[in-house]
Image (cartoon, rainbow, N blue to C red):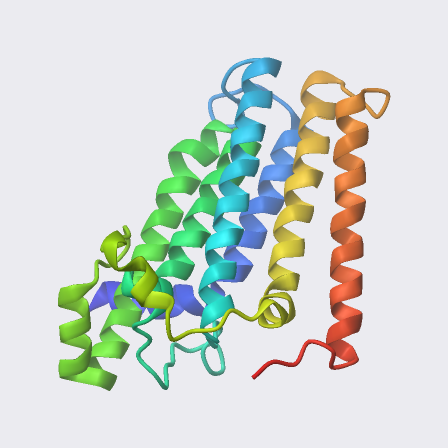
Length: 249
């Protein structure tokens, strides 16, 4: 099946693709010509509104990923960048959506597109990544079906692929699980830091090149301070990880 084959390729290169796309967005913003592809919606107020909402979407995405990983340890990169699973998770957020991490990633993706605010990203990049995530999910479903067969079919029939449901069973989904903040920090701090670092850098670059707003404005000073906090968070978390202070059971 072609979409499964594509999903396996996208799974291997998904982080690289996202990084290249974000880098291209930064280059286009610096290039700063309002054309059919490189233009953007609205004026300063619209861009500011998009940026605030983009930040909210990104935080929600980070929170969903943290809740997922905080309760259940997942080998997110598979084995040798290939889809792999030793266990079929059915508790925590997995009791409400079969793909909570991709749900979180989608919020982060939408937040990034809101922040960058380019026609190219709205009409090309966003649909493209929806297709990429869909392909990866189909490839993972193919793997899980072959690995767990009937057990996976029963799970698949009970829990939706993407949009969460079964909210009335939320407390029961977590009653046998323990949340580990150490696990979240250890496994997620690089991803969290990079995402937030990119968000603040894009915001600074966007407002400077589009509207000539520099660090004499209080808004830019606040963003710079938050960016420094993100760097400190990554540095401290990395040191704690190296010193094995973030080990979890």
